[in-house]
Length: 364
View (cartoon, rainbow, N blue to C red):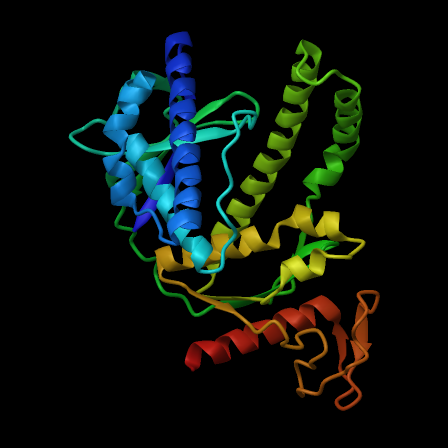
């Protein structure tokens, strides 16, 4: 399976200039052929294929000589990316968007061939760029497939190396866990453990608002505007990194401790719409958390189950199976079953029901 390893790049001034040229070249190719595909379809009602676009590149390089400086493989990868996006549009996805040079985040992808991507100590060899210094904080595993070079909103450069890796499954266990997620408490587990919500966005929200007000008072494009924009971007980046670290550590712990992991099948987009807690729900990143558990379960031989969206995990009595339809509002934290007189703590009862339903799904 494929696994990514992300490192921070430290290019010199010349390398920075070349990387920025690469972002510009790949962006130009993407926009040029997207416009061409759109025009071709409107005129002939036919899709312009990847091969046809690729055949036009030599003439395009004659017309725009600066394209010859770019990594040819990265240009081809841009065409393939466009082809996928364009075909997905006809399958129901949104129409591909033109890339803007005003977007501070830029990236391009290149593939491995004849040792054109290679790690040498604290330097990494990249096509057309040469040896670039990077922070080598971990050993990569497996065979290199491709590399994606990116520049973030804060002006930092990164390289993500995709490798083909043979991942050894973890020893099988008998434990299983049901996870009931929430806002006040991030997750309630089958063993009764309540994982507190770190609320990273709330912690820095006042500072974000302050910087946002400062930014709105600056002249767009000015030096002072850029300084405040970078400060704001760095703060958002810090929040995202803290959240990512928290989710990675928690998902890894759950994978190591349990054989079967069951979660709620939440329609998060519909939950956020018109909800007073939409900002808090976005901050906890349930969807990303579930995605992490899913791919790690595939890696290490665990079973991941997502119960049905309409499964009444909070209303169902985990002892006798009776349903209490009055348990709807989030303000109801404890309730007593009318049939067996068992008193339930809402979130723990839900985690038990999610675990039982997940085990049932594993047997079917």
